[in-house]
Length: 50
Image 1: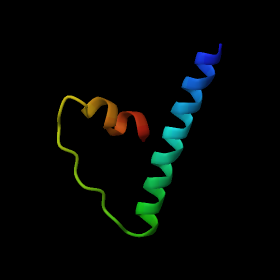
Image 2: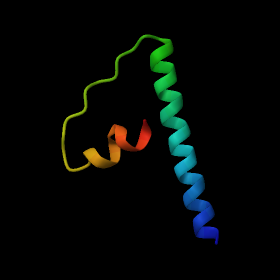
Image 3: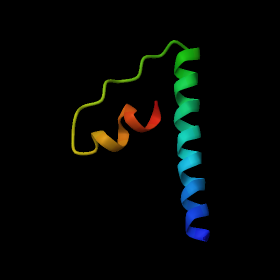
């Protein structure tokens, strides 16, 4: 049960970080650098964070 809690904590913290980053970019009118397609595109793409 501890593993599930730890994984949930990591996922929640990561999601919070990316939402915070997106909000600050919008607040400061900063455009994020375009992502280059690669083998990690699924994990770093907008599917998980938007």
